[in-house]
Length: 358
Ligand SMILES: NC(=O)c1ccc[n+]([C@@H]2O[C@H](COP(=O)([O-])OP(=O)(O)OC[C@H]3O[C@@H](n4cnc5c(N)ncnc54)[C@H](O)[C@@H]3O)[C@@H](O)[C@H]2O)c1
Ligand SMILES: CC(C)[C@H](C(=O)O)[C@@H](O)C(=O)O
Ligand SMILES: [Mg+2]
Image 1: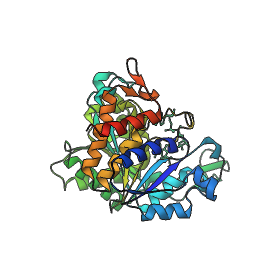
Image 2: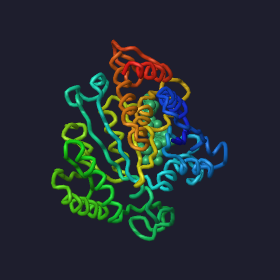
Image 3: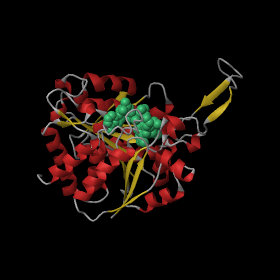
Image 4: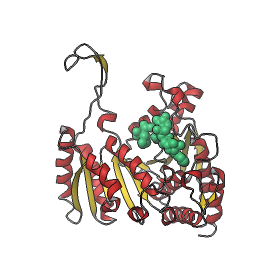
């Protein structure tokens, strides 16, 4: 089984090193090959997604991705900016279904900024459409405003769009995921204002008729953002578009204690997948050895489950993470009084040791 390992920028290399260590400790005979991506790709090859990196990713059974981006690249032309690497990989591999599970481990109930009773036992799954919406819609650009409040002024524009088949396939993914859970789907839209999301709502409703065992409700995104902090446990599977899913998944991460706990899987229709933490390259803490590697380690578990057919190994990683948390080990982002603060590397080492106990 071939894995493309793309550490990227900032804390990317630090957290990916820990996930690789955990995967190696499982002795599954994985063939892992590393390549530069993002700012690192730009430095090495003059492009955030160098052709050799893309080829490695395309030929791999799965991709383990760290994070890309750094403020120092923010003035580059957009096609050269590190973020184009992850967007390019999602598009090139057709990774339209993004799973972002927000699970509050019982040991971290007090690490959340919300009241413990609101997040205790939380287990929600955000399914984010990943290759459409305003992220990829054309046309986009800058021009002199042809009309509006300030005709002739400098203007920038992007295009929000979804086709029916794009909505249908992500809706099927959500309903099928719900069938394996508590059989509830909340579809999040902005149909009261946006035509794109009226179509979204109509199509999700139609697809839902094929899943009579799953209860479907609809919620506007502004209300969903509010409900996520008011009563997060009312949700089970949440399905939404690319941009709303980006924002709501960061919000949901804080329910679990830290964004450093939120893994993700991005799948295409061949179950080939890219696995990455939901967070970014965290330039503010890069190189300090304090980043939480658990989101990346848990993403590696999702990789074993979804792309490599290694359910038992995936469960071992998840159990090892639980064990380490139960022992009271915490990186700075989830630290609270009475627990033991550890570095990125110490956390990875502890997960490796815990594998022997599960
Ligand atoms: N998929 C990706 O590669 C990805 C995702 C999000 C952001 N980014 C990029 O990352 C860069 C930084 O973006 P940002 O600051 O808005 O978001 P970010 O997710 O990198 O960081 C937000 C905050 O969370 C903290 N944080 C993130 N991950 C952490 C971890 N594992 N452990 C402890 N703390 C953690 C950071 O220190 C920061 O305070 C930007 O260039 C952005 O475009 C990349
Ligand atoms: C870095 C950026 C392109 C990316 C996104 O917006 O999808 C990130 O925020 C994410 O959540 O994976
Ligand atoms: Mg994001």
